[in-house]
Length: 401
Image (tube, rainbow, N blue to C red):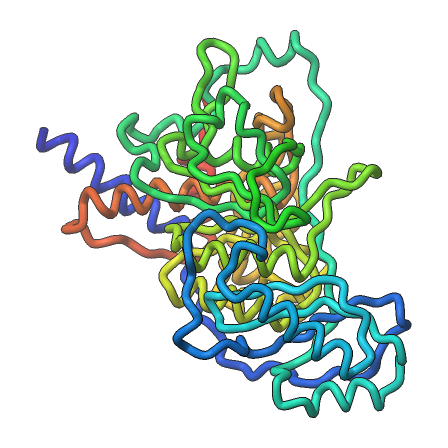
């Protein structure tokens, strides 16, 4: 028993080497927009919750359509009044209860600077920003059934003790739809909710990227054919904030991600996985900083096309950025994890996935193992070392059978 305890303590120390804590920036946000784009562009108008304090409060964790919120008719009328006063075409509106904000998605009828300034001068308006688009960062590689049978069933960290599997840790992913019926994923999924178009109803259609990311983290081996995620004992909150397009690309919007991040704040998971990237976004940064402040660790995918200060998620918001070990040269301040040809569970079957997305998922799984080990062996001081040593340690502990 003593040897087992010492071994677990050692692994606890090893896991600590894999993760870097990034401080949250206190830099001020830009409060104005330089110019209005054409009238086809959608904008986010961020307002304070107009209801009196006695009427506020989250009703349940069911995340149903806004029609089920207390005073929802009052809120909708409020949104319509603001839009009508400023000549806006109102496309959608949503209460972000956790932040005390009410958001409108609008288009300008009059694309003049004067219209924008009138809106910004309205005392009910906190700020106005463009509605941004985001993308997911991974690719799928074809694999036939014969090849799949030749792959070992277990694809998890082979040197980690069997009882260190992420049990007791809750991981949220904001991604495309996760297949709740996938045999390797169903036992781990505790919540599978849609924040794209259905405003918080259950996910009804599985999508490739979200299902694959879930597989890397929490897949539980399904008899002889299957794959095991890095942290198969962890619980998963699958929050659909992105959607697949007919072209095969997967996209997210400011509004869909804001809705999903609101759910993260309300549920307070241990870890949040964001295998996505896009432009800097004031609303999403504010939400993510709240997530971090509440104690959730955030792992986000590296985007070689965007500097840190020009992107979301950013390390300035408290996220740890992760890149795939074989796809780019080493980058200062960015954690490295395996991300090339990982076997996972996109769709209803299995396949290879490559990219910074899957590397991020891998790192989220490792963090879950670390958190479980810390809870088990709190008396063991955690070691620390430089980034190069961390990279070598990743290679050491991720040897596969």
